[in-house]
Amino acid sequence: MIRVVLTVLVAVALLAASMPAVETARTATTAERLGAETDRLERAIGGVVSESAPVGDPAMAAGTTVLVRVPTGFAAAETDGVALVESAEGPGGVALAYRIDGGPRRTLRVGTGPAETAVDLVGGPVELRPGPNRVRIRYVDDGGPTVRIGRIG
Image (tube, rainbow, N blue to C red; front, side):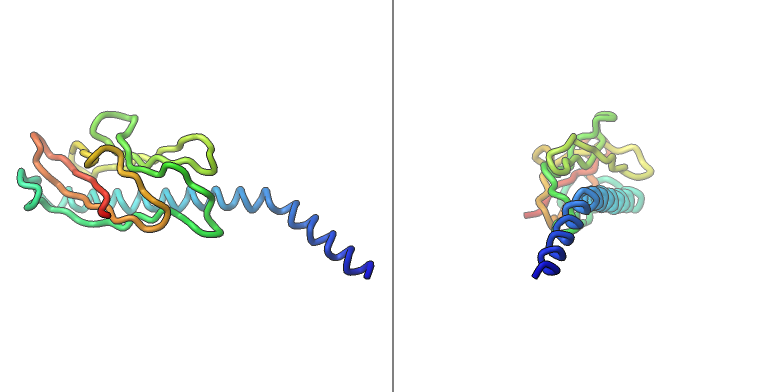
């Protein structure tokens, strides 16, 4: 009986000692996954911009759909306010903004490819939910080359 109690106490102590490391790993994993999603989105935008010409009619504009995944599950930390927003580095840019576990707001810049283009976030910041989100990218001529980004659904 005493062995069982001691085993349980040791297990609880080990679990309590390891929880900060688990939380740190979850936070790092979530930040890394969001960085990878930003890179994937940047490659998709760059591909549309480099392989096409902007047109005035949005229905005829070159475009693509990208699946952006906001991490969820046991290995991911809780995220708040994940959205594509205007970049603080300058007008016409785009960034992925997020908070992990209520911490400070972080942003990851998303490049628009080899050509100078403006960015139009359809309807303001594009809010992303936990899990997969479909994002539409269109390359239009809106008084100049413009990448329009909006969430589908």
